[in-house]
Image (cartoon, rainbow, N blue to C red):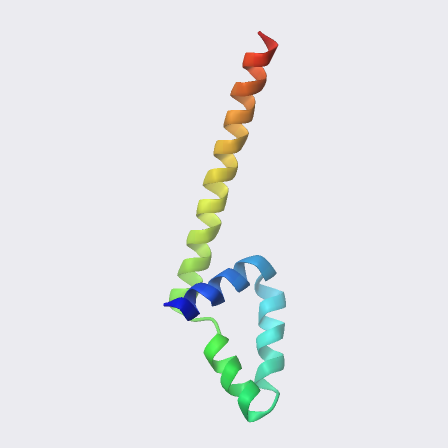
Length: 77
């Protein structure tokens, strides 16, 4: 579970293209690098976690925007 969490966080922060390029680089390397690339390759659980992280981020972002709007309207009064 920890590996899936680390993978999903890395994919979410780096973006799919950068993460995919890094994995491709690992898969083209030595035996140890290929093993790491196979472990770090995206899977269904990881992709689901990335979607969940993005949804949580959007939720809290919209809540902050709403709270800023309320605060600014209270200050204007």
